Structure formats: structure tokens, C-alpha cells
Image (cartoon, rainbow, N blue to C red; front, top):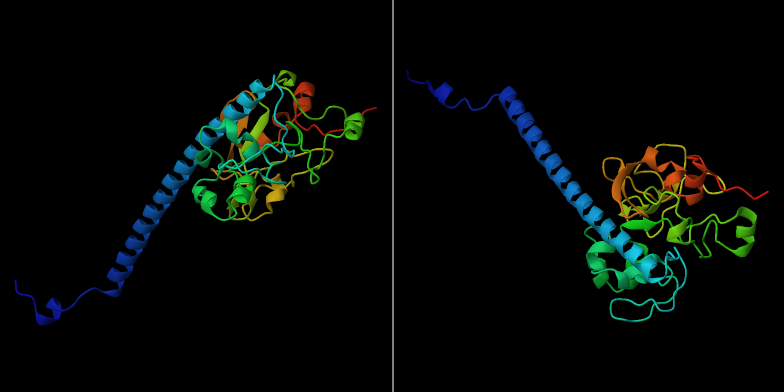
Length: 272
């Protein structure tokens, strides 16, 4: 059968072009989604490995100090950068540079995935101190002694509230539940922060609203549920796991006293 000139030059119809475009967009969307999922899983795996290294270093530091855990935030005149240069406040008060001597390789353990290049920037010492991928539960584990602390463990406050923070490994009632490190962020599109806060202290810290990437980082204590609505956490027992927002709203995962009292809604109260 011979084709007429009209049939030979007909080309694609509008419907055929629309169908082809729709198929192309669908395939492209699937490919991009698959790529993003793979990349996110790789970041999660790297962060989990970093959490294991961090908690191992943290526990090693405690073992070297007769069971005393490292203060969550306190100026340390002996803290230095990777070149051995002494660091000033507040860089020497945040945990990364104080814990660095116990870590086998700082670059891959404490900075957020893909941000290792920050160590080569002019303000690398500062960035390394303020933007580790995992924040420390400093207020209730070790104690936050900084001027910006919501509850610094001063003698006056301890007299008023009791020993609200854990200072030694031997004090832990449920070390497998007590969160030491958790995925953190300092703002939208700014993953990584040195500090994470519990849902409650003497009052509510977290908002009652569900976590959203568009909400302020402080609305959930700087915790970042970036892996399918879960955060990487490391406990005082050394176990690393992914926990959801609902699981981390349980104060027994933040406060040793809450674990002792068995109270998931625990709030620090004044002593009678």
C-alpha cells in the first residue's frame, strides 16, 4: 500500500504530542524522586554512622573522667582546633571542639552531610562549633552553663529544683532511653546545630503543633525530623536509632528524673 503525500507528511497530532509530553514528565518525575530518595538514604546512613562515632567518643570521655559526663556547654581553655590553636569563647564552650580529641576523624563525624568543606573556610572553627549535624541534650545531660541557658545548673537553681541534670553515668535510670544527641537544625534550610532542647523544662519548650520544615527551629527545640519525619538519636547506653516526633515528646527520653518517676509528661518543679 502506498502512502499519499498527505499521509507521509502528517507528523504528530496534538493529542500524540500531549501524551508523549505527559509520559516524559512522569518518567522524569519518577527518576528525580528516586534520585532524591537514594540521596536522602545516603545522608541518613552517614548521619547514623556519625551518631555512633559521637556517642562512642562521648562515653569514652566519661570513662576517662571516672564516669563524669562532659558538661553540655561550658568554656574549656584547653579546647583547640585541628591545628592545635587554642579557641576562644563561645567556640570552646560548644561540644564539638571539646569532644574532638576523642573522635578518630572529626570531618565526617560532626559536620552535617556535605558540609565538610566548611572546615576549609576562613571561619571554619566557628562553623565547626555551631553546625554539627547532631545537637547535644546539654541542659539535662551534663548541664548547660552558658549565659543563654534556659536552666543553668547553678547552686541557687539546684537548691530550688533539685538535681535536674545528670552528671554521671552511674546516675542514669534508663540509659537506653536517655537522649544525648539528636538530628538538629538552626533554621529553615540550615541543617545542623550544636544544641537540642527537650519538649519541657519548667514549662513547655516545644510548640503543640506538628513539626514542619517551615516552622522556626526553636519550635521543636532545634530537633530536625528530616528523615521521613524521624530524627537520628543516640542514647546514653550507646544505641543509635530513628525516633519520631511523638516518641521524642516523651520526657523520659530527655530527663533522667522523668525516667525515675516514669512520667512521659514530666516538668521540672520547685522542691517543697
